[in-house]
Length: 213
Image (cartoon, rainbow, N blue to C red; front, side, top):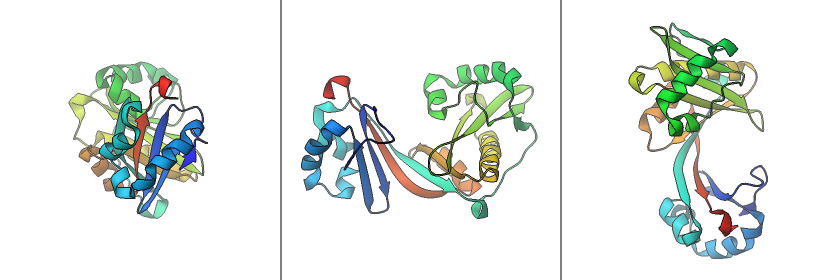
């Protein structure tokens, strides 16, 4: 149990599980109380939506997860190439905006793709941007991968192709690629596995209402 550091200012609780180890990051003023209450739980009983709801009770606004987190390094990478994939440039913003509108607010938010950031790759089919992925450098020499695919063009490996392109550039730049998605999203987990990502950890994110702080 630790107080937020990288997540300083975050109004929530974050659980990170790696094999039998569990790290719980909470707002600093809640550490003592939550740590005392968590003493009766095992890793298995706490790391679940039901377990965290039992621990925090009414303080919970939303539980997201569990999520899959996978990592990739050059020896494990199995790239997928296909026509129509390229790095996007500022003039492509209109295509990204159209893709964002087609995906919807929630799916686009999960992808975490900003319209004006670097390292964004797109896949075009019949003149339309049907998938986009980006990598964004984070801490400890890692790069987070985000991806969005047009709802009418899913299950055709367009998403795999743009994730492959983003992963390739991240690896070439010396980063370890990190890919995260909800565990219940089996096609997304399969996409990562197909490219050589290996499961590293599972995550749970808990949003607390401001009055709980």
